[in-house]
Image (cartoon, rainbow, N blue to C red; front, side, top):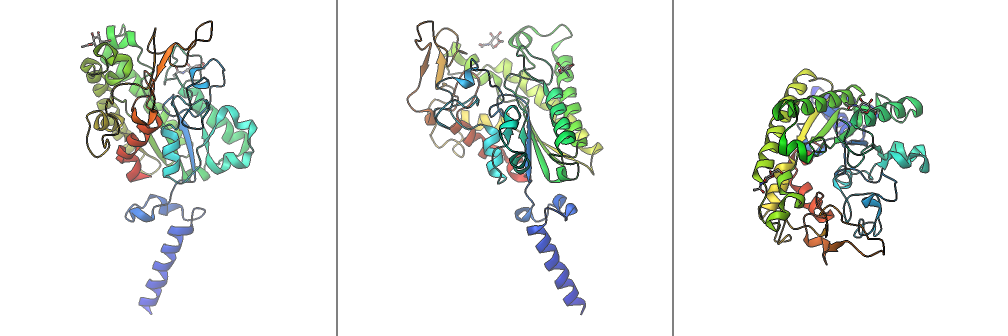
Length: 355
Ligand SMILES: *[C@@H]1O[C@H](CO)[C@@H](O)[C@H](O)[C@H]1NC(C)=O
Ligand SMILES: *[C@@H]1O[C@H](CO)[C@@H](O)[C@H](O)[C@H]1NC(C)=O
């Protein structure tokens, strides 16, 4: 009898593992059965161009110009790449459609928003205001909060089954700051940025999202913008050591946050630095010779490296474009290609292990 009861109970557990997104709330956090883990039912995305899938609708934005989007969807889509970006790979991995960009929320039904979640990320933004006139992360989270209240898009209870992807890729650090340091000193400034990231993560958690992935900085010193002086051969180590310090502080602060919020939400840091470096340094596992010159971008401006997609007064292209974006890791001066993101995503173990 005892045996039968136990068998029934195990069966019930199994069934709720497989079917219960609605009721088996506690199961979500039990990680002993890695392969049976419940996948998030919605993805909310915050941050910058590494995850923006089309929030900037201004026609003059580079992401709205040729050759952005030539690989996917074969026309500019507002993504800062030739095709898909981190968000698209993350959504596909958890079995969801890519979340709808907030800016076009009124073009799709509420039902579609409820199915997939929403992407609030705007290229060029940071946790603080940058030189781009787009909503900073505080405002992006305000949008999330307003949608929850106004449209019952996802109640706090729903959010138990939601995940967030938060990208902070370095727009808070202008070139001037990296080179000359801000007035208050570089390290205190990095601390200020990291503290603001923590404030933002905490708020997303308080809105009910249980699992949050936040990006560390990638190797900014390896961006084509900074390797152009060495003909795309050598990363700038002084910029990379700045990046490492930011990542060190972020990991430490996230660990502390997780200790404080043990029973509500959990934050994972995505090691973008390690993922990009494993490709750039030609680690066999993530770069099967597909990127022969991983530091060389596919699309680079002739006057300023940043001007991929620009044309002069006569409509003449002011950039050079490679033949096959699939063979390039970097798309333009600061962003990976779709193929680059595919390789980087497969190296982002924290996401693959926890989502
Ligand atoms: C974000 O933008 C809002 C609106 O412009 C501004 O009021 C706020 O101070 C900014 N927040 C941060 C942390 O910079
Ligand atoms: C690395 O970048 C910094 C900041 O832009 C610059 O001052 C320095 O000269 C660069 N180093 C090399 C080796 O290019």
